Length: 329
Image (cartoon, rainbow, N blue to C red; front, side):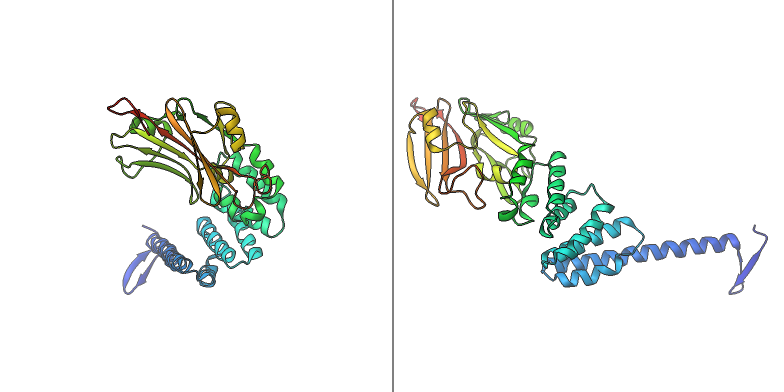
């Protein structure tokens, strides 16, 4: 027992007991502060969902000076997003700078910091961040390219130069109907393993991949769970990923209708498509190859001249013999 003792409400209290009470009080204060922040954060996120961004800033600003680094990071990131959506890019830039210093490994914060760097005029910093994002192995570039304003940022020659440093060939074997180590006719379970895909349902008829909200490819299966069709959104791949299509016979992502005809011969079918486009179909030994060309969305890729058609989608469709020995399309 400690040599000194005190009395409270007539009960003996040792120094050791008093120390425990102090510790409990400090823990209680910490828990209260954390609960208070969690409550404010929940309110702030509800406000953000309703686009009440000024309210987000008001709710979270009191937590800017707390000692817990994770709380300060979340506070800075949420306030930064609120300022960003209000169009107050300088304030957003300061908030994201603080967030990045606290948690440099958080990719989404880095992307917002890239965007605000560009929007406040620090292009060199924006380009440096984009290069680091790509160097980290990122495949989804949607936010990195759209947050700074896609039409302006994605049209910068430096952006195209940086992305070109990290290009990933997406090889397409037209003769065998094969891409990403998956062939038409493969069983679904094998395709899932090779694609390292995830699906909410093991019986789902389609596996998809996106960059942000933009579809980049889809693998569709028939009733027997065999791969029946592959759809590649070539334009989205070009805009929002480092993937670049490369056909096995020399054609690639810059293919034009004339180039495809020069290599494969006249198409078996040609039809008009949406937005004044044109769809061309070739019957190959194991599949149908369907290419859709049309005017690109803005910003126009640097290789596409004004008014020229670019490759928008690629489809591979499986052909199987029917009971009469003919090929089913």
